[in-house]
Image (cartoon, rainbow, N blue to C red; front, side, top):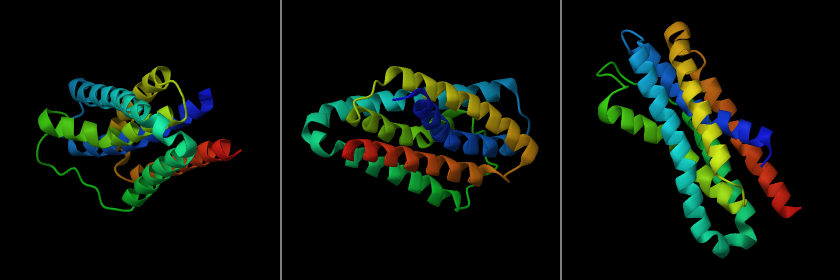
Amino acid sequence: MSRWTVLALAVSLGMDALAVAATAGMALPRLTFRAMFRLSWHFGLFQFLMPVLGWQMGMAVQRRVAAYDHWVAFGLLAFIGGKMIYESFGIKTMGRRGDPTRGWRLVGLSVATSIDALAVGVTMAMAGASVWLPSIIIGLAAGLMTLLGMHLGRRLGGRFGSRMEVAGGLVLIVIGLKILAEGLG
């Protein structure tokens, strides 16, 4: 996987984290260092761990699907990208009850924003790509985008969250098309 592909993948996967973090930034009565650290640390950690887990799952089934792995990779990325675009048109609210940077809410949001990275990890195994460096970059990008999202949420409100998710979804679909073209070519 090229550096640009990994970077595009990391930014695309971080769009969910950015959008949720923006909502958290709006929901919190005060944006503190502790809250920003908790949310960015957990989102980054889960975004790092999920591709590794997905890659391990993908390696376990790789031999069985080697003849059509590029179709599987394309299907997964197109589905994830399409899901991100579809969800960008829905109304997402975090609600005002409780702190989204604590407890089970934090764990739930961390899993929800990184579940797409699990499928990307499967895709990386199907493509025969290494997982460690991309996962580190994905985790760091998600952590930084979470910090940015919290600040944007506090300052700009909810104006740009859905547009960022659409852009992230489109990038994932383009990466899927690239993998498909390479597999067919």
